[in-house]
Image 1: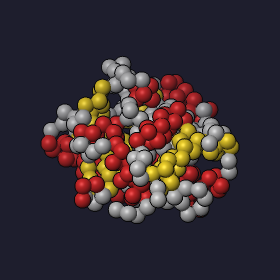
Image 2: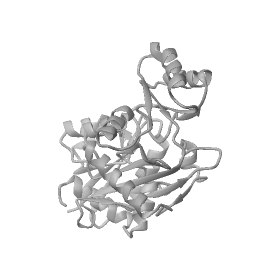
Image 3: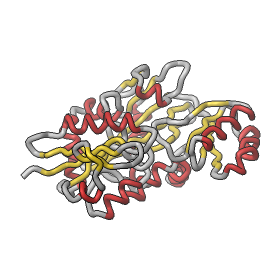
Image 4: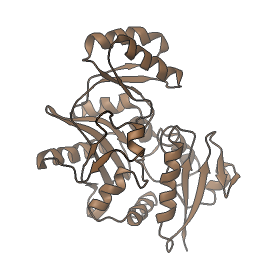
Length: 321
């Protein structure tokens, strides 16, 4: 009897369109001889749909054996949908609700990285609109300019800007709060090679298998922004042009963050390789799986078929590995 796999995609986040592509890739590559995929669309207002019709989540969840989560950003990666799945006892892929929230909150993730002994850019944190002006003044005094201004709880580099000087920093922080950010992280800008490293639990007999790190080469006038990620203008080299020592450090750090954040099944962590060392930036608990995404490229580099990877995730969620 086929396992009914509900593929969750869309969602009420700023990464709705990317999530649709990840979900489509999942639906197209789930092995038909073993699984009966169900396309579960969640619209921008958070309404669930089954076979094109709005349907209460509890009715949909009673009809599936396992959820393959193709959501990104808020609701998908911050623990929101995971709490719902846990409440109804539906097995699902990826981190649990607490691990998802911890990894999505950039301040908490950076603090865990520091506790684990990893380098991470120096930072400041603002969570109250009343503190914006004083915070901006402190940033100008204490951090080298320019700085990276980012929302604490959004993904895919949405809302991230690189600015320098009091007025631009103040404006960037104010804009994020105006756009709905609950809190903002401001980091020192570390110059170096951008890198990302994925890990998968239980792959090839290893408790936590480290995939080859990818070197990311965004356009010269840009960083790895949302547009650079999904427009096809960024070059990605896999395996990256890193020394053996740096490659091993990236893989070690990716494993450390997966474990220290209490994640499950798979994750992908982002880094900057600088002259002073490897700096941790953030961890993705549900990394993109579109044709443009990084995780499928690193899987292909070690000969893991995408369909086999999806089967592996489903088995992990069902406790079959």
